[in-house]
Amino acid sequence: MFSAPTFFLCLVLSQLATVVLWLFARPARLRTGLREWVLSGVTHTSAWLVFGLFHATQSWAWAATAGLLSLTLALIHASFSRFLKRALPVWHIVLQPVLLGLSQLEWGGPPELWGIPTQNLIVVGAHGMLMAQALQCWRVWPASATSPLNNAQGLLKLCALTLAAAIAARIGVMAINQDNTIVDIFSPSVVNMALLSVCLVGAMVANMAVLMLHQERAWEAAQSLAMTDALTGLMNRRALLEAGFRELALAQRNDTTLCVMLLDIDHFKNLNDAWGHTAGDQALQLFSSVLQETARNSDTVARYGGEEFCVLLPACSLESATAFANRLRQRLGETSLRFSAGLSACRPEETSIQAALARADAALYQAKNEGRDRVVTG
Image 1 (cartoon, helix red, strand yellow):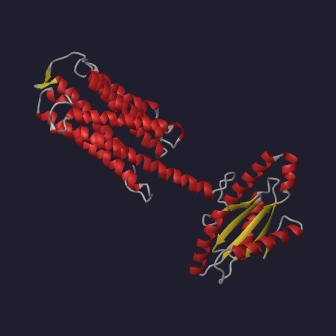
Image 2 (tube, helix red, strand yellow):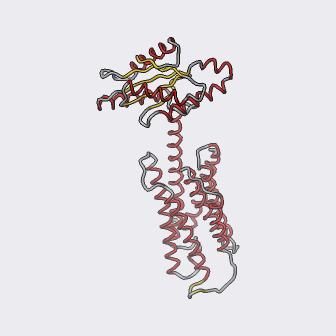
Image 3 (cartoon, one colour):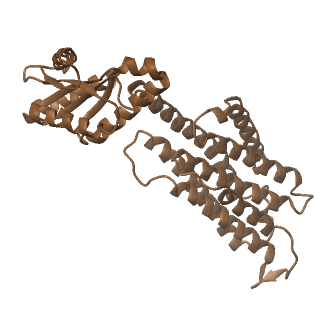
């Protein structure tokens, strides 16, 4: 038959195994927030080991356990915050556990307050602080989101709320039973069994949810790398073609014009030869930055390859697209960068932007043959 000590032993062993597995995964090299998550597993295991080994013989054991459990929840909160790119300062993580641990030491004083054992009031206060920290871990997640991370976030929020409820139940029992026996987690009590069960099952579910979160984040990062040019941060050719299908379908549905412009930095090879590839990279970054600033929010800007860039201009006539190129030329006036451009409009019968790209490419070739630093429509 299961008892509190049995659940306690299962909890400690499962936490030890989890920590070992995380350490083998080298969390420092993994995604944001995992280091804090692994440290929370270490402090959680340490808390229960200290309590199990010393609570019966050492008066400081409960204070150390309370401080370590508080540090566990603070690290979990920090892990979630860092994952959401809202890092917490170190003092925010350390201060509350230190204060909680110190408050649980025996400092002397009256044995009772308001007819209630002082020790019970101190322990109830500690549980209240731990419950508040569990609720902080719940509140850190957004109330609603449309991202596919929702399932994992929901599991973590459920774990935090369940833990807070279990702690609240133990507070209620301690308030009703005004003696010191309930303070011992090993005492035969349904509430103690429930709390240990929540810690055991919740830790396993939370670890699974954290894995889901970081797997999804890693997948998103891989997708972004596959669709983004590393040097300029713009879309790459693959992403451009996918965006082109969407923009063309939208233009045909709304009966508007989609223009395609290919731009090539003039004499880029000479710049590379004269100043080196570092200067060439800086020129590409500068050009892409000015190009993005000039484009509308609805335009799609991509690096097409080498020193070539492409812009999709939805709901834009050829005349307006030419005006866009002139604005870009004016913005680049203070630099030594010049460009040639080929421009084309997608036709109603076309099902992809490939034909328009081919016409724009031919027009770009013509612009270069005619002396560069100009826009030719094809």
